[in-house]
Image (cartoon, rainbow, N blue to C red; front, side, top):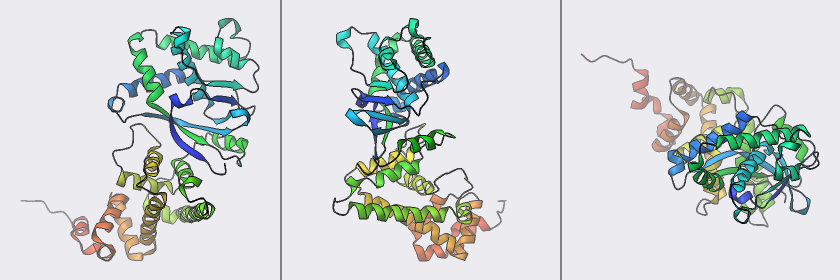
Length: 361
């Protein structure tokens, strides 16, 4: 494949897969606290309003993989979560007679001989053979201890974990170097951003007719780069927001569109809300990718026009500084029309802001 594949997968969809951890990664190192935090997060979701909702789900950080030989998945990022989830599922299996146990996914560590077999046995006798076995055994003990007084919750917890807990499945294209991706994601801990995930959605080959796919992908990629480059101009960026933390500044537009079009669809405690919105829209046959991309361009062109119009630059800058939100102003400009919005200083909207307030007597 030539482009990245991306989707939301419930944990249940990982069962039966085979993963391996390549030699450029360290072994399993999650602490007892990190294991407990994951269990607590899933429990909190299960007992929350989202957990009781038919459509609610809890989303974990991305699992980044690349297809390898013999049907294996090379895990580029997310091995700690993937291994911990395996240990939790293994705990559920150990409570059942063998004939009722689920077939789990498999994990092998390229640099640790016997790790795949040890995950099946997890005996204390072998736990000190190497540092990986030590951490795996300790994590399994943490899981068992956490469930010790929660027998009445196990069944519902297992169902929620398998069917309502999702991972963002991000499959690297064959042409990308897995080591380069791993380095970027792990040196300095630079996570995948909403912008990168949304970009992968828009550039999927299957979004376009086969004969024009390459041209359509190139067009979107070039337009994307021009918008990102424009937003990298600090004068333009800080005219719109004081948020200097975004790596990919085009993400601001995706956040605005998500809030405008789907304000109630973002799951709680979900940092990838914009990705979720666009993923839902693109998988909806009524919302074709080119229509969504036109929305992105229109939002950008509105912001760009404000920045390059001296009158609007000062007016919009003042209103944002006074606390008005960019989305509110975009929606106002759409409601009033371009011509009327350009005369907005004469409107009640601005007169109320610019006029001194008088106290009623």
